[in-house]
Length: 317
Image (cartoon, rainbow, N blue to C red):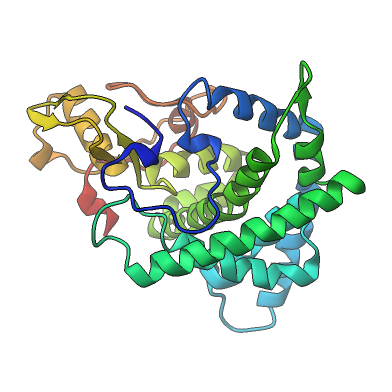
């Protein structure tokens, strides 16, 4: 399977400027830019974010305290990661509303390339928004080359390994990836996490009583109700998935919640129709870490968090 969506026979024609981030590249093309981008995300850069994130979060809560209601998505989950990512990249405050508008248009067309899944108008608007974002970051990158600052764009420009640097298109693609995918996934994570806690008041009570469980709770939310529910790949040759024939260039969509159901059914030898959500009440002492679970096994984060279990798509409603 390939991550390169352009290989798909369903892939639409390119409209406007085109940059491909490393998520849509196969090795070895994927490996090199990813290795260089990681060098810009040093522990020092990440650690410096925490005090500012706390400050921004407290500001949003203080603003919400002025009213008798609090809309989680529009007043916390959406603005918080947007402000953090803009500050991380070094986007001037006065440009953020315009960039947010472009990002919103772009995100509307990020579905797998299936006919009818994305409206033609959304595809056209997304192409225009991408062109505007690329033009914006091209100018910002040029400015940071002349006058570097302590922001991620400057770090990406300077990232180097054995004399190798990111090209301008690779730097542009990384900025577009962060400003769009990085924001939307965090919005979903915060929203899904709060909804899950509200639907499981015993777990909310436990987290309030033991704030040290917060890190494990976040990782458990990533597993329980993932911010991204599907991903797509392109077949690099003819073959089969189970009994279904797959031709070279076919797009294949992986729906994560269905994979969870299949893994649980396989691990427990239980028919899919009889799988139901179960709960874990045991608390393990292992440190949480993000790792893919294998059939019949639970990730460390799930063991560290005595939380919920999802085993059926019906529990999503």
